[in-house]
Length: 355
Image (cartoon, rainbow, N blue to C red):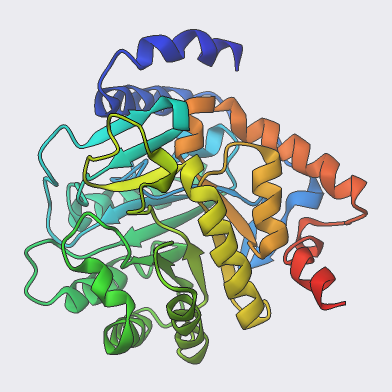
């Protein structure tokens, strides 16, 4: 952490995307130096048929093209999610398109699914899987999306699922980015049902999750959750970035278009997580993401119903040492609360409320 504190002012003199590219290069270098330290057995669990060494994952958006998988695992994550990947390469929206809101510990981004396309990432991920040294690699998820100009966006999700079904440990259907016009409309009614059915048909054996927006009404979120249960979808990721500006009022960037991530999203995403867990009685795997920058916040999401926790913006402000600190602190908290394993803490708030 002390090293990152020294480097952060220098990194923050650079535009956010330039600093991000440097970070990716650094992780690629770091990947050459050994493996992460073993995690406490209390942090391990099996979900969706996958063995997770710990509950912490790198959220989608960080390593869009799957260039730093080993480096992300090296700093201690139990899993990583690459993407969002679209069938065709996509430049995304014009720069500047990422803004740091330092007092609020937040970011606003309107990247717009910028990536080099699924073909590029598929070749890289396939080559990664074929290397013997990666046989024991931690979990890798692939986040799939639709091209902005696609005539049939639902078909784009089907294409992505079919392409990555055999090389991804799990797939995430991203229908909640605010930066592709009209994409969030796919979260409702017949559209989300058709996406679930078509993706499951082409990827019958691969765990599938759907990522939803924190701006959905709770009734809509629970409807998506019920559709997931009814259509053999394994879980939800709660949540994506928000269009709300309540938490960044007064910032010179508050009027910038895009989704807000970081601390302003914590309360709303955690409440949605709690409500969906209660509505489904823990029958879905839920991944909590949004505003996690401390072990206490991660633990709050777990007790609210998250089986796994993803982060990204928190790392921008806290540095890579955050992962190790959270694992140590969560392990101590589990012991203090009398939980033998992290799985015992999932949804603890709901169970206590039911008593």
